[in-house]
Length: 84
Image 1 (tube, rainbow, N blue to C red):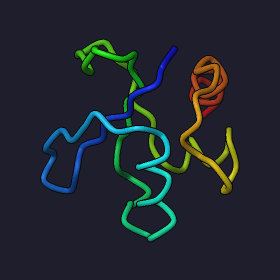
Image 2: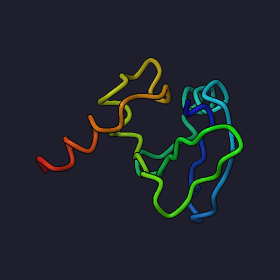
Image 3: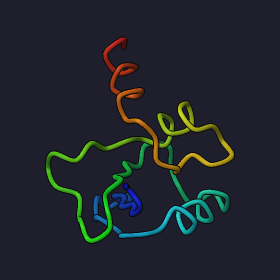
Image 4: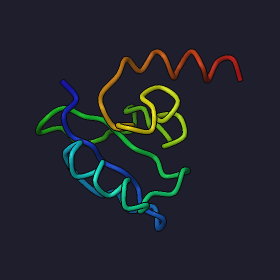
């Protein structure tokens, strides 16, 4: 289960781990730019070079504006990226 979220801030510093609830609250307050990369990892893990990153715009497409940070099947976004 991917229950921890990391992101890179505007200075490219890695921040986290955070819960979905924490990140969702900051999103609702308008703290995130649509270009900020997010990383979903399991408890006790940290993002590695091979961890996929997801931009907020991609998360909104897959999960909607109500809860963009819930875990999802990442193949959905990977297929969308291939079409671009």
